[in-house]
Image (cartoon, rainbow, N blue to C red; front, side, top):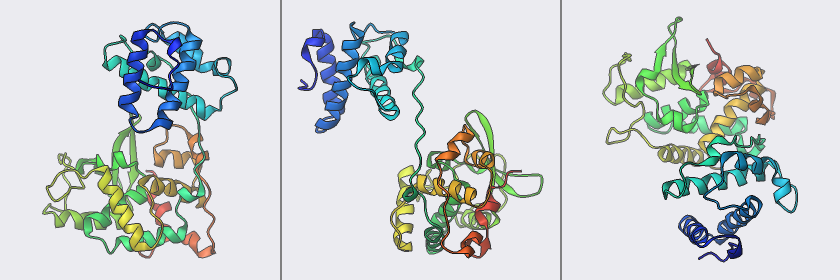
Length: 315
């Protein structure tokens, strides 16, 4: 039973199913349960039909007209949250065979572009300390950190990399080639990253030459299995501790890559291509990192100036 649902709005079966959803999803989280229940009450009252009978047209109308359903106007981020909560509910109803489909799958999710806060991006000093600390790690973790930082990959794309995702371009330089947003994505690897990567490859008993047929994971654990996203986060956390800086996430490294490129004068279009953004407008979320000293404009990793700018150039 849920004390937050308005019992009078629902049929017996609606109420029971919603209670099961809330209890199973938010056990010991009354605040979250309360937020969901409030939106379910508003949704049910506005629709005025069983939650099992609504269609995508009605759902789309509700999302586009939340100001009519709620007592006061809702912020764009709140509307996005409402959509996500209702979408999750109908995924549950679909799993329980209470509905034939999720009507919110046919409703476009409200897009909210959030600015990335300055504290979610490393300063030049922090980045230099972090990459210097990486040299104290073992070869695999050092290669991981350099690779992740200088490519700006999402952690899920990073851990999914296989050796055959590394290709040699027409200039004889190595880069990563994957599919993102159903489009080919290429990013050249900086030669220092390549150097560390090949040393790591040799340390795990592989030949220096990377064959096009090697569909095996690049970064592996002691059992020679693909590393997990959580392990990447732990490596970054340990490196941050060694560097004497606050803990950062993989997304912070990715955001930093984009912010540094903008600071170095790379165009938003180039940044969008390198970062794999679906829209150039997304680069407006990134802050410009203002260096405290002029020499940080020549930011270096192990003595290589402008490594981030160089590694970001597309062929």
